[in-house]
Image 1 (cartoon, rainbow, N blue to C red):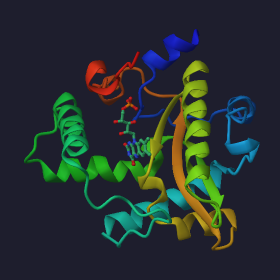
Image 2: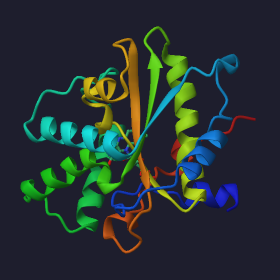
Image 3: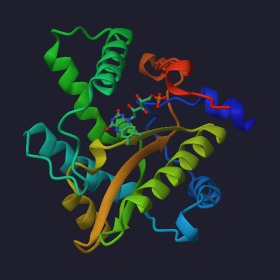
Length: 220
Ligand SMILES: Cc1cc2nc3c(=O)[nH]c(=O)nc-3n(C[C@H](O)[C@H](O)[C@H](O)COP(=O)(O)O)c2cc1C
């Protein structure tokens, strides 16, 4: 796939086949992704790939906590509020997604069910978790974002679907337990990855973007 085609056609997938991805495929995606740039080639990131029993442990524990409305404690706090423009983008994206899949505003139960499916890796067997040592700062998070976008694009190029998920790092103590990591390892993001259901309506959602001219200014 051409790079620009991949960038233009990638979308987040949220409904996966219950089918394992070969380890070699994940290794190929991650080896290429690790060519991402970072501050002075510092390469701050660490990666845990969860499959098999480890995924079962993470999914069941996260799901149980979320279902019981346990307070979240992400290592990097989720934003409390957004400026108006971003708030509007978020609202419109959610509205579009739920309309597209036919879940009405009033259907709180179905919305909750959909949100909870985040913790089940949207039915995928595999998730990739990115974490940092706690003394690393904002620039290392930026570096990790570049790594994450590489992972999303190379997954797409390999015919797999992926969804970057803040929800997957909402209860990081479960992740530290699953991967036997100390408290000073801080989770940035989880990515569900796998074979996605091509006929699933949710996987057809194409999100909008703000107008190019509202974002980009040329100065000559
Ligand atoms: C940092 C970050 C956190 C995200 N967290 C979630 C999440 O928890 N659950 C989810 O379904 N999507 C999550 N997403 C996916 C975004 O909703 C998605 O990228 C956005 O709506 C644009 O859609 P697209 O990826 O299909 O282009 C996250 C994306 C990013 C970059």
